[in-house]
Image (cartoon, rainbow, N blue to C red; front, side, top):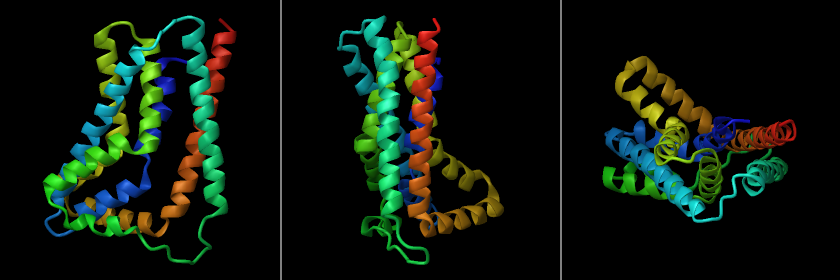
Length: 228
């Protein structure tokens, strides 16, 4: 499997995060909340780029044998991450709230609509860069990028595109709100309500699907290596 066949599920695992997306929408749809939401989304972009770049640089310090060791990592990483996500998804499915039970939102999420743009930007950077799931995915992306590119330009392009894909769910609603008009804003209101009401189920399904995607990516990479 080529580089982007491996990077796409890693980027989507970061991008498809219902909790920060719900927080973004709460900021975006609050009175005078556009600047804070824009700051949060920009902070998310910067945070993902920071972690992906840093971990790619750290990965470059490791001995990168482009034969056996590198190929093994490209198979093992998505398989292990996929299995971990599937197990986590099954645990979350078992522990999910019963149907009809209202789950209160985290206290910090309810406070997001009162943030200043500067604080929202800082929170976006920190949440994107240092959230454990994002760190693991960025580390895996660093290994894939370093294993697929030999020149600095190719590495920078891969990191930039990976960051854009991992940030699309944070940047998209802000651009839609800014340029989409009243109809789009009404849809964002409905999306916010749907996310808040179905947060647990969405999280479980997202984790399971991404886990399966990563396992399939690892198996495809293994098959590709065996057929060479």
